[in-house]
Amino acid sequence: MSSWLHFVVETWSWATRPLVLKFGGELLEDPEPLRLVVTAVRDIAASTPLAVVHGGGREIDAALKAAGIERRQVEGLRITDEPTLAVVVSVLAGAVNTRLVAALTAAGVGAVGLTGADGACGLSEPALPHRTLDGRVVDLGRVGVPAAGADTRLVRTLLEHGFVPVIASIGVARDGRLFNVNADVFAGALAARLGARRLVIAGTTAGVLGVDGATVPLLAPTTIAELMAEGTATAGMIAKLRACRDALAHGVDDIVIVDGRDPKALATTAGATVPAGATRIAADRI
Image 1 (spheres, one colour):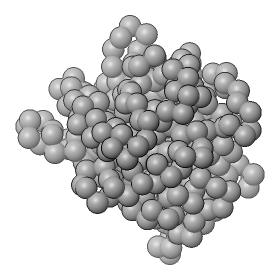
Image 2: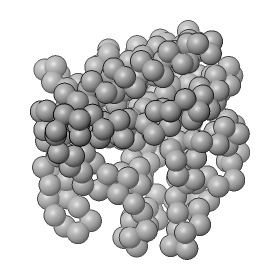
Image 3: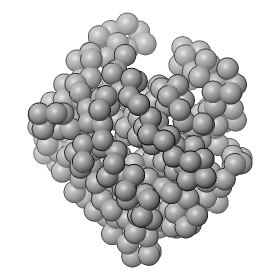
C-alpha cells in the first residue's frame, strides 16, 4: 500500500471544495472533442473551483512507435523504462498540456499548465512491483505512485484566485527524478489531498459496464473487487477502479465516470445529479 494514503487532507469550507476533473488523452487529440472539453471546463469553472488532470496515452503510443520503442503495458499500467519515460514527459508536459492550456486560454479560461513536479504537487515514489489479477509480479520500471508530503499549496493558491490548474500526470521524487504516474491514480490522490467534493473521470467510455454490457449506474468500493474478478473490467478500467477506491477511502465524496464526448453529461457532473449513462461510485453505499 502506497504511503500517499497517510497524508493529511487540506481543509476547505464545503462551499469552496473543488472539483477535480480528469480527462483521458483521447479527448484532447482532435479539434472537435477538444472543443467539447474546453466548453465544459469553461462552464464548470465559471461557478466551481476546478483542477484538471490529464493523460495522453494514445499520443504516447504514437510517439513510442515513431521512436522505435516497444509499448509495454499490464492491466492498464504502462511499463516505463528510461527511453519510454523521456517520451512520456515530452508528450504529456509538452504537446498535450500546452495544447489544452492554449485552447482553454482562447476560450477565456484562466488555465495554468503544470506537471506534478511544479511545487512538488505530484510528489511520488517508485511503484512497487505490480501483482496482476492472475498472480504475476511485474516490475513497472520508472512508474511512480503518489507519496506522502506532496505540497498542494501552489494548486490551492491558483484555485483560490480563480485559475484552473491543468496538470500533466508526471510525478517527481524528492531527489528530482521524474516518474510516469497513471493519470487516474494521480487525479484520485490530488482530489483526496484537496478535499474535493467530487472526482470526475472523463474518457470515451460511458461509465463502468456490467456483465450484461450495460452501464452500472451506482457502485460501492466493496463491489469493485467483484467486478474486476468477473473479468468484465478492461485493463484501463481496472486502474480507474483502483484509483477510485483509494480516493473514496481518503475523503472524496464521490466519483463519476462519464463519457467526455457528451458535453451536457460532462457539465452536469458539477452539480449534485449524475447524468444518465454515467457511473457514480460512492462510499455511502458501503
